[in-house]
Length: 482
Image (cartoon, rainbow, N blue to C red; front, top):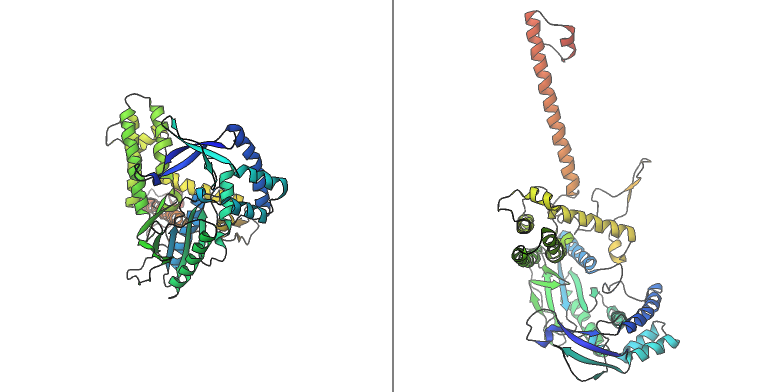
């Protein structure tokens, strides 16, 4: 009974008329999932304690996330931009077709045994994988039971872990930077010489041979290449190949939910996020006649704002005066939501609306989320590949209360900086703005003080001429004109 599953199709993206755009999710018995959780804790702890899961894998791993991987990728690309002269980065995003459904059971059991899973536990896992059955459940109708000969059930507890074990050795012998998020595979290479095409093609051939050996398949039609560059006159590069097929070259690619364009400006991603948020605004306006303000507030925070929040710590730019077009567009989107929630007229003061609703500006929210993400990364030291990019602490020459601080550049991750250092000075933008504000304040205070003293000196001079000059007047000025 625990080996039987009802499969329901869940739409991913694209046309709903194509069966390729649906993901099969298995509905499994609750007691079976509890049993899987017990096995999961044992196997996962064993793999983590012995460091058997590659750090290039970010999917289904506690302490790691899609944002962490995107931070690392953006950091590497920005670092290439900042080199003198500026370097290009070639990235290939591969599509592993029906990865979870193609897992070869015998190959998975072999890799588990190579990872140290043996004895009764290995026999139990083998029994878990064999003689499984499933049927399709759609609109209250169900198909006949069919035997599952390959794949791991999507929707199970052990399925993602088994897939990580199965795909774990795909990174072996790959020389380019490679990152995995479950089945989303991407490789990156900074162009430093004329052999970049040869080097990337070598790694692509290794990946193709791996997929053939372990009965997987890379779809060349959905595999794309993006060349990240800030050069005006971009050099020509030979096309990359996957087997006998040429890889399409695009100006942008959506990777793990964020659109990466060739200049890494994130304009396309922000445009898409605003478009999705505006659809939610229409829904809020429609239901505002029937529900309370508290309900509208929750609808915004649960279904609209997450579109603007996703990846915001990556595309955030320092803009204290709110003059950048990106900042204005994002803030304008939330302002329209505030009008819809409160029912206020267009032109109402934005800050008063935010104060009434208890909202903060999206600019402040992004900056706060950045700081929280960095502090969490610094505290947990996880993931290791991103923690290694943080610069060492700078020791103070004096024995102060906080004897270890970060350098003026604060964080060496370029995505945490306002922009790449080629577009902005090396010092942290917030540090510069604070210093400038202090200097401006000091100059204002000095000018006010000088003006006050000049007025007192002039008044004292008049009194001396009139003959009523006193010692008190002499003490309040620097020098009385003769």
